[in-house]
Image 1 (cartoon, rainbow, N blue to C red):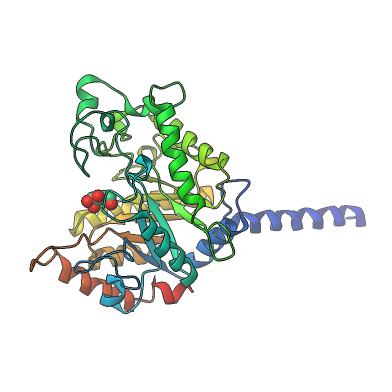
Image 2: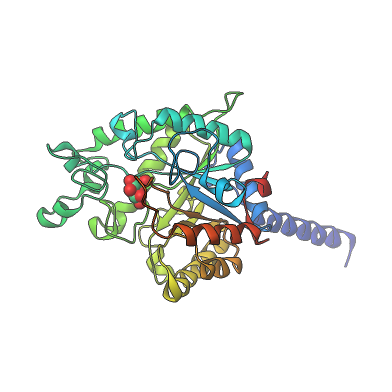
Length: 369
Ligand code: BMA
């Protein structure tokens, strides 16, 4: 081999090594991602090798027995540390309300969010958007009731497709654009002390494989769902929001094909996630199987994956997760319990949370700082 050939071969090898290295570090899908979004993605990547983060919805806002006491956290009180990931819910911000569907003031969410970022914690956001058709009708608008995200009854009886109605050309597109403007304005207000936009994981249009939300699988076509995603992400990007990592999400699924129905495309997605509530052997087996094909897809795509919602913890779940490269798991909110009642499954959850805290494979706030 002459010198020229040797040089070219060496250069090729170097290039291949660089590409291989580049592929192993995750990058946000947004070509204009802020340095903070890039850093969050890299952080998720480096934490993947260390363990699975524990997350809890509304952990910083209220617990089983308290409401709105800054600094408190059921996780810390039960297990001695805050979770690594804090979930916030923005349902009804689209209506211009000051308070969410779960009765939390958006100003308090902003306050806790900024504080949490300063502590080194990671935020994930969900959004139970009201039904764009029936929320305009007179009648009750309550979480889970008429006009809410869960209102799908009329869609199957009279055939109104709520998703199509909010897309460009649809009757509710102008109203929906205003909803996105309100959401964007809130996201633009979430900044650190230096004024930089705080990066976070946003999981819009969640649990698509179920049909209990107006954007669920049997409530629109797969293509309409994908368009809804692209329209949402594209619109938020056009408002200067480049600090967001987007999490694609389904409820229970039994194959990779099923998981990807309505997938908007890799350019719009940073993370593959799954929600699965359950207990017992069937839950561990089925959720475990799904996490394994979602994990494989994530590896192929060079993106992280997570169990973004689940119910109370169990030893079976801890064991199943500890064998995976899952980025995090998140248990849902502790809706306050009135009077002297105890929340269902609370003791069990508390005990399992303490065990998870002792398990070296799981990470809480102190472990990710
Ligand atoms: C659901 C329930 C509801 C709540 C909603 C949004 O799973 O917990 O009570 O309003 O999430 O947080």
